[in-house]
Image (cartoon, rainbow, N blue to C red; front, side, top):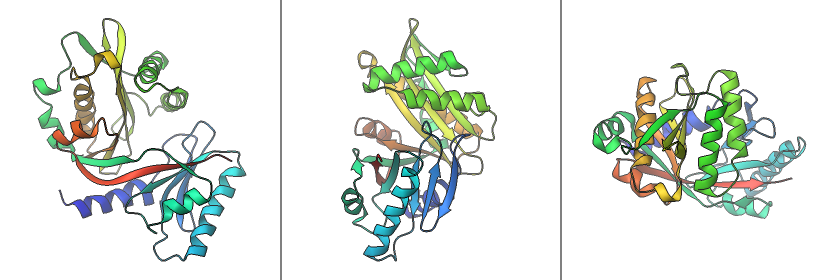
Length: 274
């Protein structure tokens, strides 16, 4: 895998030429930025910025314009900043404008076919007492939200609303057609949901995004994360996506590295609440 080529493809396909990630959102090029705007339940924020040649005054003007855009709609939003973005002090400028950062994550990518091979045997099978249940309806969404609230300790109302909207739009569920959409899956042990994850794909792109992989504390270390990864990788391969992409936390990064994922960059969400 050529690091610079893959990163350039990711920037082009998933950021600069991004498409809306839900039925209620729109993506637009607004001067030097590409941003998504939707309702209060959608992801709102800046996906890409072209500020390499901008001077300090113009950078600050661009930041202020995004604040005005979302504030006029009463929306909190995120500026998704990558470590290879320009200018190099953009994070400092966002802080000065009132943004608050979340912990950085590592942008990791692997070839889909390689992950499918690595998880084709026993390494990718769930424990014998677990079964994988595709999320295809509202009841499944509730199972996924329950897992996430236990695994991450925070409310998952936003994920709940998002998946319900995708299901209603016909682009959610493991059985969504090959043109793209969301895939979600829950691991169940003894009738109890214990691990869950989702994947989002866009037609015509090389990348399938893996999101929200989490396991309740007492079930960790049993191979459930790998089983959910293998499940999604096989669907990504069927849909023709060459790469799997993850914004990896410090907990998942070592697991992904062992499975062949490579770090391309780091990403830090900067949030602004009007």
